[in-house]
Length: 348
Image (cartoon, rainbow, N blue to C red):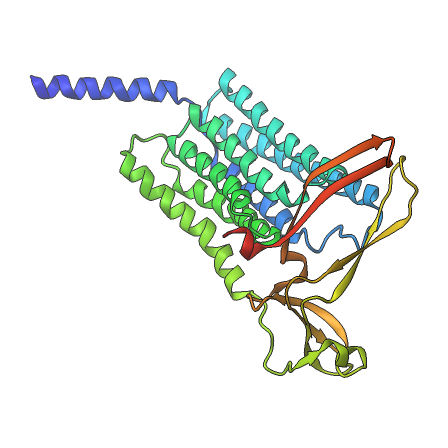
């Protein structure tokens, strides 16, 4: 008798759980959004670049148009396929499902507008992390009413996005992680769905760990194997010898000693000041090595005998303060703080 009662209680609990989680995210939904997002993130360094569209406004509008077309087409195709799948199973659209779908579309639209705004207000290094947080929020909200695994993966996606900023990863590394999260993580999640079956926390932890290993393992492996290394046929050349033409042919490593003056040119635009270039007479604080070929830099640089890195990824630039002042003794003035630090020192 006790076994029969226990079975009935288990059946009732399963029915209640199924009633609470009565939504179903289709596998094709995750595959479509994953491939679209992963494709855009993977191709972003080669499409609609500054070389192709020098004007900032044109580049911003072009990306807004591209994201709207691609994501809008994915949303329409997902809607059509989901409606057809429900028709085959003779299911109706529930009120909650429609609201959750609106939240998903709202998050995708928010990411599109955020990407567009960063062209004008800065912070472009955060765009990939922001997309990971947004997709994590979408998965978590959907998981509240459907499958528990979506909640776990949604939280992990949010954590990965925030951690990439907290750990101050290079933009290229963050972009690769985001592309993996979309292009590999979402299709893999589609294969891992178990249609709302009750699982233990240990089982969910194992599933989540496997998902994280795939999402992070692939891009980090690619990143480690892609770290620039100076070739063996790049003998060192002093800066004075380089300026005399000693490295005009072949590959060389130009060594720039500490204390070398480095003029930094800044173009100031806007309605307050005239558009005139400003040159800051800064001094190099540590030795710098630059890989050149036929007298032209090829990209990799090395600071203070650290690991080689691409020139655009060697530092983290912050403007902690900027303040305007007006005094009788000095008159109008603007004072700003610019902090440029290498990635390795930022992580210490």
